[in-house]
Image (cartoon, rainbow over all chains, first blue to last red; front, top):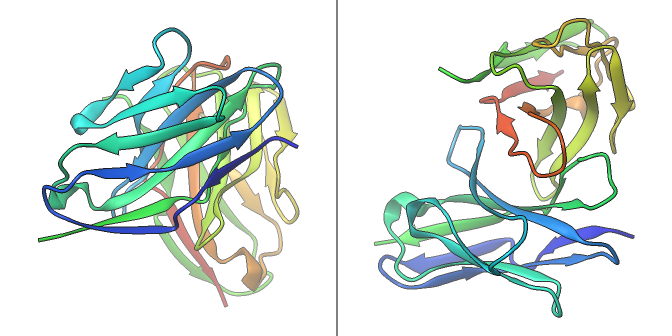
Length: 114
Length: 113
């Protein structure tokens, strides 16, 4: 079955520290990968996406993610977080051959402390 | 401004009283979808539409109806709401295809008493 797993439901971190939010998927077909961010009381907005090509993709607000096909992972990283990065982050996957529906992980709440 | 607009943003209702949550997008997107977000469960798809007059069930369609009579609008209908439908609902749209970015509305928080 095709699924998306975000391994951490909550990640607390101090300001200016690095952070990695983990995402793994299970699929036997090619995938398209996305990270979305949800700030408090708002809808989701796209951070970055991997469609093809370079496995390291850069997004908004200094975030980047690396696609690792052998490990079926798409972890999100930022070298130095700010208080304003406090939000919930969702990994999402589209599977080639599907009708285009996104399957979301359960989310990771990033809490940045001063 | 390109946007997805949902109404109402907040609603408290009682069991069994029919309600409609409207969703409208101004980006001429073909694909539209409804999700519900519950703590610890992430986003789960309720219904989606690939184009006008084409709708299909997502993962959790029970208790919901949708229609797509116009490209820009995709209302979510709860014919007889129940407390287990208390949730945060999001409408989203995209140009379609499997590489397109989803654009989300700001959400509608529904409480069913």
